[in-house]
Image 1 (spheres, one colour):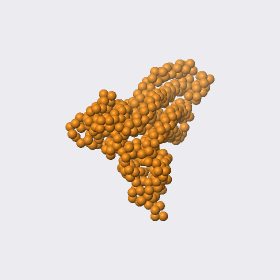
Image 2 (image 1 turned 90 degrees about the horizontal axis):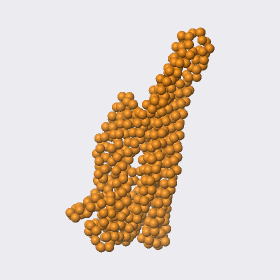
Image 3 (image 1 turned 90 degrees about the vertical axis):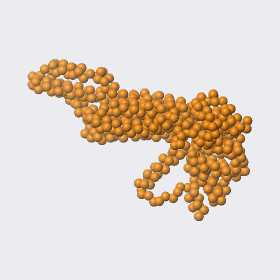
Image 4 (image 1 turned 45 degrees about the vertical axis):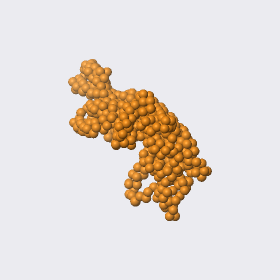
Length: 547
């Protein structure tokens, strides 16, 4: 019993104090969300970890060194589970086989659970760790590629489904607007709230499906010490620009400024941040592509010539590194000056801005420092990274196709919504004018032309449905619906494309600018095609005929 309690305390969930019912529900949702986030990261994380452990095995690391070193890699999600294995073995005397089995029973992620069970069986069978880890690395790469490919297929299907669902949300909004114009319901607020709920629910459901199906691929390292120059520029600008934009937008909203102008203002002001972010995202992709070549070349030179890293850097062909060349030359020059190597490489990682370079360069340096063959480790690291880079290129292609489709769909949906609103407003104005003309004609004609007036009464009754169109409430309805669709498209684009949070600025700039332009331009186009004066002239002619 005591032993079971110890295991549960180490491997299982930590004991928590009693909570209220509401706090328990909130915690359940939080745990569920954290589980989703962890599962999305786990496939790539296991590949990082297995590359690291396989590289350590090439350096002839012992089993305690393998698990001890891997448990200290806090940048990996799976390291906390390996740390539990290490605690059970080093602190409580369990064998590695037993510790892996105990931890596997309590791990919720199926990929990590399967890995621990296979490792336990390998230890029980007497297979050398190096052989198992090399074979497992190949298997992990295949599993990672398979999971990514499945995610891409899901992305294709759910991307089309999201577009269809968003179009249905726009249809719901349009239907509600026409219903209000025709029937003028007494419980207007209830009707509009139903429309908001349906539009928001459809949008959230579609975004949730996209989030669950798209594989996680963080591009930036997120370090606070060093960053790329584009990331530094964004951090400096956004500290001033974002609060200013938020305050001015709120002031414009309170002052009753046209919603189109507010959206256009937000889009144009945030645009520069989005452009800088896109440049950084593109540079990171190119640097990652170069790094797999660089690390293999560096390892081959170090092993082939028996050279140290500073000497090997001078021998690496830097001209083939298009995007990475300036950073590699900077590292080489700093090493020649005799600066501390650890700080040099940390700055190289930070200025690259790349998550993959952050993970794989540390794997290479740590395992080479333990005495491993640089050439073999360079191949292991380079091959793992090359697989991830190639899959990212495929994802980028799918993401570009989705966004290229999403932009015109957004234009169409918002344009239909705004155009229909303005058409109904134009018809309401014209029909109200016509009804006033009929009323004046009825008052002046008296009983002289009873038949004609009865016809006018019939006509006025048929048109009365458009008179009570609630302008102010429907203006608010159009603006809120447009914002729901716009924000939903921003979230969907970011989820599909990935990248750092600064990519939100790019999509805010695109979709807010488009929404603002539509809100400003469409009313003028409606005025051209639906001229109130023409309808008024028709009503005047009808009035003359009746009198």
